Length: 182
Image 1 (tube, rainbow, N blue to C red):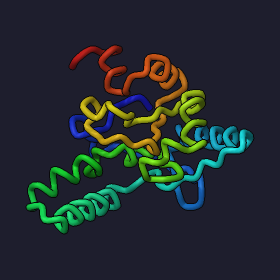
Image 2: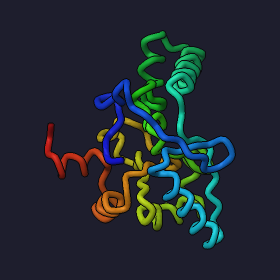
Image 3: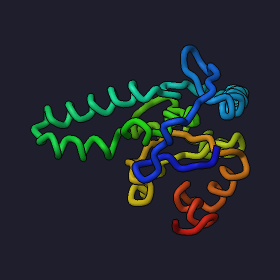
Image 4: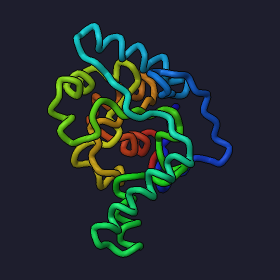
């Protein structure tokens, strides 16, 4: 479950997700689903409700989200090219989104204010214990290429998540520490 998915590292065409339901119709890859369910149960024991608002996405669904974002920027008066580039800062193209892996989950509230919630505080303290990291941290946009998303968590396994948490670094920085600049 340890790989980077981004503009620079799109998913291969033959990438396969083995889905398992985690809440309602939301699914994650089975490699992450049980860890997520354990985390959700532990949070509930502490009085914290983790609510999935997005998880595994098809490439078609991802394209639709991207196109909608482009249109919203065009409606603000941007040219096609400007709107396309602005949209890329917020929404990934298909094969460049972690949601296409089935290893990412968006929780509770897709708003910056989520960082002020008890849920975010709980996740900040415990997510790594279940193999999840805050994927797009604050003030790391220049490294991740994605705006701060306090709601977006990525499964990478307990060992790697703990290493990232202890160092206070991004997945990209951790990858470079392990394998060096490629």
